Image 1 (cartoon, rainbow, N blue to C red):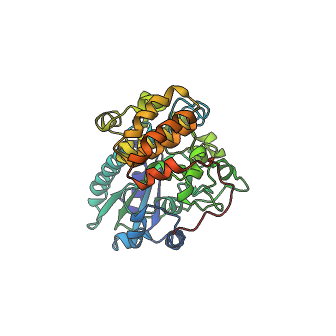
Image 2 (image 1 turned 60 degrees about the vertical axis):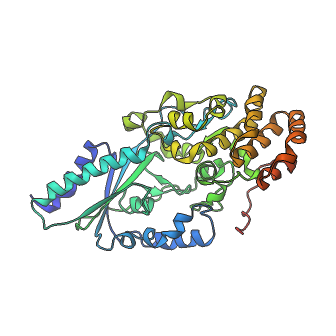
Length: 392
């Protein structure tokens, strides 16, 4: 059983396990990825994602995480949506959840299949090769999946910084297997974005200071998922009805026309209740019901307070007076970030009610961030495309 054919058998097995893309790269095939990471961190564009900086020495290269690694097997699973992710943009009474989070947690699905492929590789290659080792990673580990996937030929990092595939557009979940095996590498991906800037102009908050660069502090996915505190005022109107993530830059990619939903992994089939949830239902969730509704979903990890905060921003953008009472009820929430978002939402929905609640509640509020919300009366606006303020 010749090793030079192991790569072909590996790819066939990967396809059998649901991976629509599989490629191989030398462990050192993306040397500039570490440089770009260090510059991104130095510019403060990671925002609150402190773990990116704390483990940058692991993330900057495969060898930084595991010195013995020789080859990286990059894999992709399609989650191409059946419907247009932007179709609910004008539906003020519902919340928009990013396509990837409408089904089960992809970390669990991808990692399970990565482990299965790793077991197969250990058994298949172990009969004819000296002892070797391997490790599997999804994006919770300090791994630069996108530049490694590009080096392995799965596609290229587009101007929105995500991986783009000729066959699967911008809809790939990525995973990686590191191994001490010396495997034959594939030809790297070639950037085919050309002059297209659709993803840049589609971004509601101007999160791309330049093509191929992302300022997470301005990104709706970051603001609704990673950011723990109040969402900055200048981005709230632009968030619209997005309550978890944002698909805009992905959804407008022209290469998506080749991404057939029929090829998407059935494990990522969206749950009916997460396709277009009513904001009123989200606002009514307590801790227990939040955990129940989002069991098995990646959304569960952000916790109830962030989700209610997000839904309140969407409510404030909805122009729906039917949400006023739900918003008023959250002015007494235990979480300051929820109370603050409720104040903003109420001012947008019913300024007279906001005034009466302000007079009644202001003196009893002890949290400075919430007091700041009661005192803020400036009209929110979307900032123009300018350099973001420096991080202090």
